[in-house]
Length: 162
Image (cartoon, rainbow, N blue to C red; front, side, top):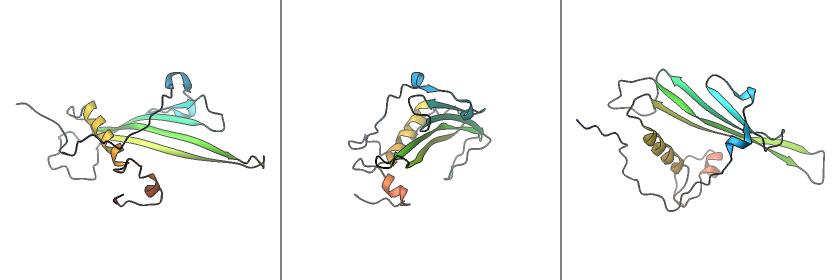
C-alpha cells in the first residue's frame, strides 16, 4: 500500500502580485536572551540594536497539547489526538517625540503572533506545515498584492473585490 498525504485544494497557482518582504535581522549577532522572556516552553531574544526604551523582542515557543482542536470537522480523524503548538511572538515598541516640545514623549507598540498547531502524526511533515503557513500568509493579502490590514484593523472581515 502506498500512502499519499496532501491537502485537497486545487488553487495552487503561484501569485504574480502577492509578495512578502523579509528582513535580514542577523539574529545570531544582534539579539541576546534576556531572563524575563524565557520559560520552560518559551525563549525570547532582545534586539541589541534598539534603544533600551524601544525594545524589539522575538519569542519562540513550543507547547505540548493533549488534544488539538480544529474549527472544522475532521471526517476521518487521526487516531492520534495529542499534538503541539509552536511559533513566535514578535513585539516592537515605537516612540513619538515632538521636535518643538522636548517634554512630549509617547510610546506605543505592536505585537504579532504566528501560531501553528498540529496533531503529532508522522504524516504531518515540515513541507506540509510550510505549505499551510504560506497559504495562511497568502490569505492576508488581496489579489492585487495589498494587505487586508486596513480592513482588519477596523473590524472588517468581509472579502470584497478590489
